[in-house]
Image 1: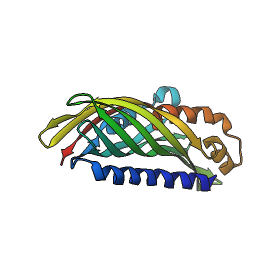
Image 2: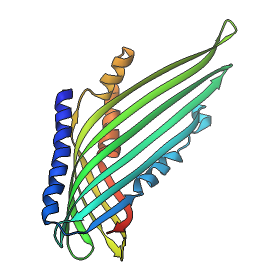
Image 3: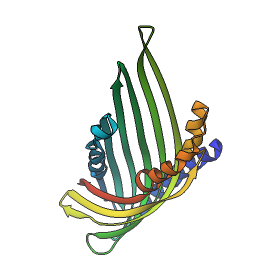
Image 4: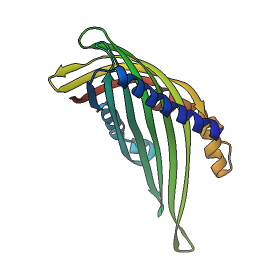
Amino acid sequence: MNRIISNMKKYLILLCLTLFVTVGIFAREEFTFTVDVAPTLLASMFSNAETEEDLLEFNTTSKCFGIGVQIEQMVTDISSVALRFAYFGIGFMESWQEAGERAELDFNFYALTFEGQGRYYLGDTFFVGGIFGFTRLTSAFSGTAFTKIDGVRVRETVSISASRNYFKLGAKLGWKFDFDYFVFEPSFGYDFNARAFGNTFGQQLGGNIGDDLTELDEAFDILANYIFVGGPRISLAFGIKF
């Protein structure tokens, strides 16, 4: 299975390189480089999440970040191709203390995404496009407990992680507004988790601790299908044209 995944990654990279080399022979000499801040805004929404201490008696802190960068090349007056890289991660740390004992639980999810896009412009600004891409989603959990045994303070730690690879397809529409060399590009669309590879998160995490955690796979699938890999997508990109 690892060999299959490795080969598919190579084919994706080769496809992107072939696409740009082939297109470069016929393409217009016009590139656009943009930075998408929508993942940053989405991450800030998670960063503002707080736990109701009177219900859970937890103290919650969060650390979230997201960013996307893209380079687009015009092929003709009305069509283009683009490559996009995006990072999106969210993490939370729960801590609580009772009767002289303290514990901390840190859990993180982050996704690295590479996409190839094709666009068709209907007019001067409006465009529709298709997307194919690859996402690697990782979940990491660590915990620390401070207890006293026979009056001696003891610190115990545990750390486990798991990763899974996905291929995705999507469609989007948006507007590309040119202000001389500056560009503002809002867009929205929907991505689909086309295929997942490797053992599930529940299988991997459960194997790390010698327990059956497959009952968590439904929750992980929801996170992948609607947040990290697929689901609705909004972009607010700013950049330059050269």
